[in-house]
Each structure stands twice: as structure tokens, then as C-alpha cells.
Length: 207
Image 1 (tube, one colour):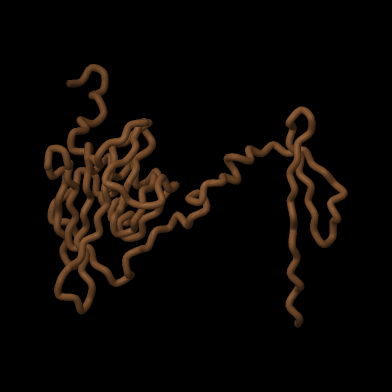
Image 2 (cartoon, one colour):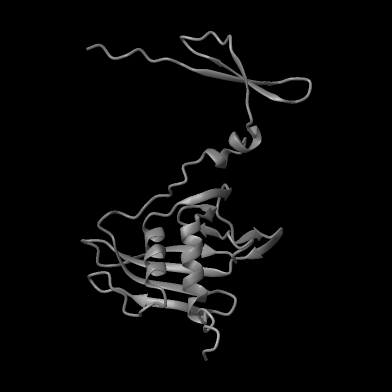
């Protein structure tokens, strides 16, 4: 059977004297005789910044790569927040306070994704809360590949969490600064602060 012919659809936007937005759809079967009032924020839905159209999936590790160690360091204090090695089965030598959070961080290291990009290239300082600051944490993963005698390292610099729901990350290797997706934000919070969490308060009448 013959392949169906491709068609092109064009959407044109315009405003009236009161700045109300309208759309006109032109396709092979419709010359655009119909005009529709639409409720669309064009600046939000169709941003002009190049980074907004960049693929948010950053280069993943090879499928046969094995993570052998993970280290999270607070840079200003040069303090190791969390560190562990992994056995051949991927089990951590140091039990984390939240195993699910550790697995989410490992998933991010293997296949990092950006919620959005903040800079065209990596830099040693990052703008957080309107102020340019040095990075706060360094997340380092040691990687082993079959046939390689020496391990390699994948590293992400992390800024302090802002606004309760945003954390920026930077990678020299990937030459990018970007906002993390929410699962990675929550998992890193658990890895950094989970050990200090006292848990829920006791029930009334109990000590």
C-alpha cells in the first residue's frame, strides 16, 4: 500500500484590540476559515531561549557500566556527607538512612535529566537566589567498565536548595548547568539531611 501523503499544519496566532489571543489553523483540509479564541501563555509555552528547546536527557552512562563508589562532599567545610562503596551486586557497603533515596541518586548519575537549563556552559560559580555563589556540594561516582583496569569518575556540582523545590547542578564533563528534576531534588535532600531527621513527633500522651 502506498504511504499516506504527509501534511503540514500551520497555526497562526494574533490578538485583537483588547490583546485577547486568537488562533487560526491552516491545513490541507482546512484553509483556515475558522478562528478560535485560545487561552495560551505564549511566552511560557513557546520560550525564545535556546536552552528551553534543548534535549533534557543528558548523556547516560553505558549500559554495562558499574558504579563502584559514591561520595557526597560539602565543599566549604570539606566534609564528607555520605560515602559508600558498592559490591559486585550493587549493594552499598554503608547502609543509607533512606535506601530508596540512594537508588534515586544512582539512577540520576546513570541517566541524568534536566528540568531546564540555566547556562550554555559550566562555570565555577552559579547564581542562586539572585546571588552568585560557589557550588555547595560535589557528588562523585566511581565507574567501572568491562575491559578497563582503571575506573573513571562522573561528578556533579550541586548548589544549595532554593525555594523548597529547586536545586541546580553543574557538570564539567557535560559542560552544563541545569535544574534537577523533582525526584533527584528530593533524593539528594534525603542523602544530605536524612541522617539528621528526627522522624515524626511521638503520639500525644507518649514519650
